[in-house]
Image 1 (spheres, rainbow, N blue to C red):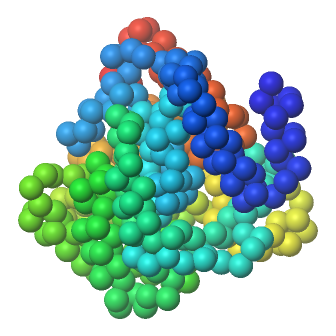
Image 2 (cartoon, rainbow, N blue to C red):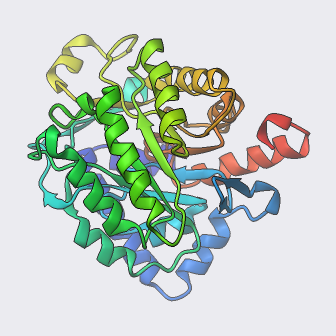
Image 3 (tube, rainbow, N blue to C red):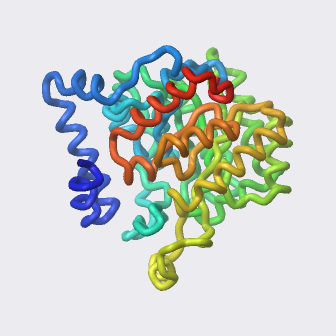
Length: 352
C-alpha cells in the first residue's frame, strides 16, 4: 500500500514539504488515545535475541534512524514506536540556524537516492535539550553534534564542546559530525591534527562526567584508503568508541539519472542506493584493518533486509536507515528485524 498508493502521492511534493507533513501526521496520530499502543504492537518485533550490547549500551534491536531525520529531537518519541531500537537526533549546533537556501533536498527516483544540501538547519542546542527533557521512550537516543556554519574552523572545537556538554545528560551516545559536505569547509576538520584535537578534548570532558557515554566519529564515504587508515590511527590514539560509516557522498558516479538533471540539482550530499556498495566497503575495510577493535554503526543505502544483513556481515555492530525509510516506508524496521531474527535462528554467527 505504501509503495503503490501513499508514496506516489507523497512524491508529488517537495521532499522537505513531505518531511514536515509526515512529522505533523505522526504528532496528530499519536495524540489519539490508544494509537501509540496499537502502532507499537504492529510495527515492533519483540524478541530478546535481537538485543545487542554495543559500547555498554543495550539496544532493543539493531535498527535505528540516522541523524538528519529528527534534527531537533522533536519527534523521536513517536519514531521509537515504529519498531526502531534507537534514534539519532541532530545534527545539533550551538545556535539555531536556517541552513542553506531552498530548494535544498532532491529525489533521484531512478537511483532510489536523495541529494541534499540542508546545511545543519535546526533551532539550536537549547531547543533540542528542551525537547529531550520530554523523553518518554525507552529506545536509545544518540546525539549528532556539529558546528555552526558561521563558526570558523579554528573555533570549531568550542561549538563541539558546547553541544557535548549541553546534551550530555539527555542522550545515550554522541556522534561527532565533521564529514557533512553541506557546511562550508567542514570536512577540513577531518584533517588528522584537527580531528585529534576535537576528539581528545571531548574525551577529556567525558572523563569529568559521572556517567560514561560512547563517542563515535561519523566518516565520509569519500575517504581514500590512506585516510581510512588515519581514521583507525586516530581512534586508536584517542580511544573513542567507534565510527558511524558512512555519511553522504559528493560523488555522482554510476547513476541512472541523466546528467542534465544531476547538474541542475547542483551541490549536495547524496544518500540512498547509490552509496550502498561504497558504505559497505568502508565498513568492511575499517572492521578488518582494525581487527574489529572498535564499534561500527553501519549506514548507507539500506533499503531491504538483504542490505541490512550485508552491512552487519561486513562488520557493522548495528545499522541505521534514512533514505530507505523514505522509499520503503514505515515497515522497514520490522522487515529488517524479522530477517535478522531469522538469520540468528539459522545460526548466522556473523550476526551474533
